[in-house]
Length: 138
Image 1 (tube, rainbow, N blue to C red):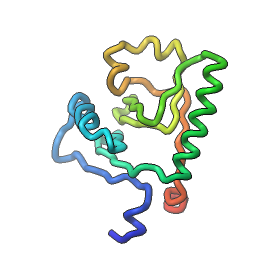
Image 2: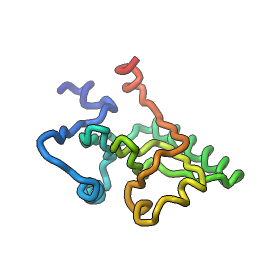
Image 3: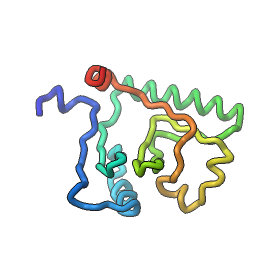
């Protein structure tokens, strides 16, 4: 791996074909590694992302503030930070940079589920793309 490849924002993928990690174990793994940005794809592979650079962090904070300000005025739902994981219908666990869920939908989620990676797909998400990801994917 060269220096350019090392510093791209593509996740490091841990292939889980050789072992099974259930939701409880995955939550525990994430809790024990809080300094890492961890997600899981629909194939149950574990994805470890590098922290954002300064520009990405600036944009992430800005859009989160805008969605939060809008939601405080409308009181239509709940805004979640990029530290929040959601278990999607396909089994993936993702942590978007900004997530918003309608109040009525979130209020139906059981408390024990809200305390982990809630089984709900947000109504609105924003994901900030880094320059390196744009170059690689364009």
